[in-house]
Image (tube, rainbow, N blue to C red; front, top):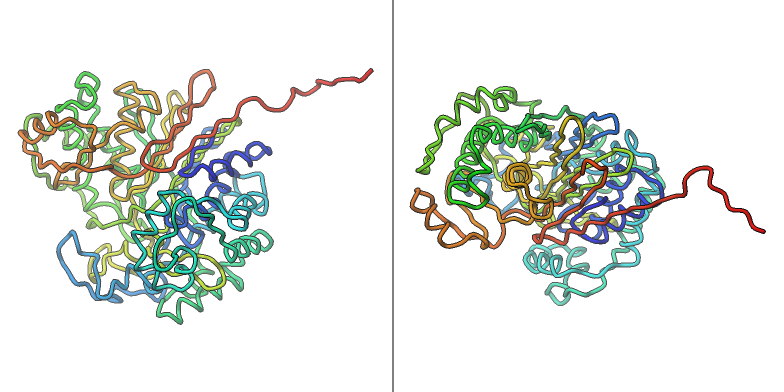
Length: 539
């Protein structure tokens, strides 16, 4: 089963699975394909987090998030605001667009590591679908066209991006054929020469040389020193299931575990999905997670993160006792030490893939902002990230910039097991709304008994302490009831992005699901090769 945020990426994964590759091979193929068909969301000059379950039941987290260049420093930008909502804004938007916004890329290194350590196919095999899509072209979706339109002004500032995505200054329309010849040539070179072409070779020299010529700080030394990190996941038990996710610098696993622990003391099923009681409880639990996240989650190489305290049942009991079931309240952090919160981008993608042998992959990756830094490396077709925007541009803070520091993230590639057997894998894009949305889908599945399609499609809520966001499917009566409890209501067209999920049945079958918030497409494969020993003779 393969579920990705674009039908052609799901097709790429299916091609690899049908050819005998495993879920890891298919996931890497899908991610490469997404760099072609979702260029606004992901690229090989980006970063992300992959959650792998191996056939022996072991879970592995591969952290290939981007990091600050070695030449970066805490005062490299000029902040224009101390207000939380605009604290990341800088003079000239230099941490958001242009060469100085680019952090050290980790995606290619992470995908190559995942493939080498856990895959069965060589890089040149899994990259072929992406090469075809870039070389032959693909049909632009309305989603991509609208994203181009929203960023047309910034795209126009880069000659390569303007030529590729704009026509007379306007977005290319849905239904157009988009060919990326330069990028196809780069992918062919990577297929032939491997990731060292970027991290230790001529392609890396081209990238670093261009960025530095434009005022950036990424160097060949940064590329040579970058390496993905394998991390041990965090987990908690919830109503007879084990919920497993990534550790810091990704915050999703920790705070989903924390929220489930708090929720465990309530009869959520009896409240009913979407009732004022249920939504109020979810909102209060979200606010608890966000105030604790604001003082506790960052790169563990730079900050001591109190993971064990955050996911402990004892701490959940303390926080649970403070919830008022009748009134919204303002929350303060618990007894934790850590860091301040930050702002992230929602321009991300996700894949969820499982094979017949027990490999499962849930992987979230991002270029950060739409089209990243809006910088294309000339002659390569590669679009650079703007991950430096995730750091606090104010010096002297825990989330301030430091050489080699990894960005922190709300990514939540999650899995759920029962008695050691896989039951659910999911993930989605959506910045600060990622892990709250993943959390709600897990609750939908476990507490409300939804099937996997219902669980990912269901209307969502979100708050971090300000307004309580509701999707349109919630009724006005429900919104009014929540308002009377003290919540400030804000209606949203959608909360977070398209979720991909796979449910695993006890009989060994799998069900894939993708929600309406993106171009997600499940592709399931059944049947297969003849059983060994079967032979037909002609007469």
